[in-house]
Length: 370
Ligand code: TRP
Image (cartoon, rainbow, N blue to C red; front, side, top):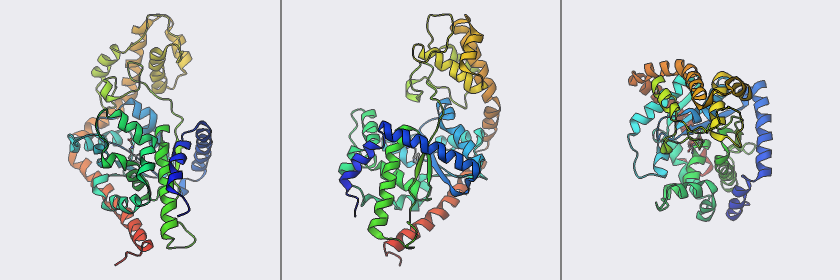
């Protein structure tokens, strides 16, 4: 093994440095241009934990981007990461319900099961089996240094580190590598996972050689950083279910109106777009902008001295209008769990075919074909 495990912690830390981030951003722009020319060389893999309903932060931060990539013709794998739910909590909660609800969200916003493979962790044994050889390629020291593991551990308060939390970057490497994805749309916080995934792929190759000398078994997966602006919660901090500041994709119009009314603004009646000095007001303006396509400065100018009340009225209208067709589709989908389950089963079956083929190659490389 040329790649000493101890170097990897530094590599992971380096993957979040400013210079490295700039490089990743520049590379993402190149990849976008390549996708527009010819999407056939890419396989995208991404996913979410089914811990609660998807919200507008998810929609504008990542989901809309996924639909765009799918519609550009990129082969897309979307994981409902049910096993990852138990990385940082003690039980699965109402998991069936949440998985189907997440699936309804996906389909309602335009993820098309004819173009994208949607599947669950627990339904793809080959994916999980990859974890075993992969774990032999990392050290506990490098996992403990992983910035995402550290952040998750801190977020769970006094809960001791579980084996699954410690090894979660390796599980995520298996998520990406089981289908040989070469492109992963992520936010900055997930970049260490991608670096870890590349390290695992490289070390596997170095340790076990190649079935085909010209071709590594696993690709070096790249991040696709989205340009999307972050939508904050109704109190101007990160949108997150635990903070109760969320607008869910599937909320009805009245609930949306009620919650927006409670949003935090400030005492200056004259509305301006100034994310630095007026984060709460500016975030609400940004929401209108994302829903209507209008420029945030123009929106603010149009509101003038309409105050927080005027701004909130506009937010409610814009969100409710933009999400009306999505919500109507979602209501129909949610009423048909049989259909949702059939979509999931079809996706699971395809993921299993792909995963079994990868595992067969892994076994061949490890000389464990019996
Ligand atoms: N860790 C991601 C999250 O918390 C979800 C996820 C699981 C994922 N496996 C993945 C994302 C693989 C990208 C690629 O949201």
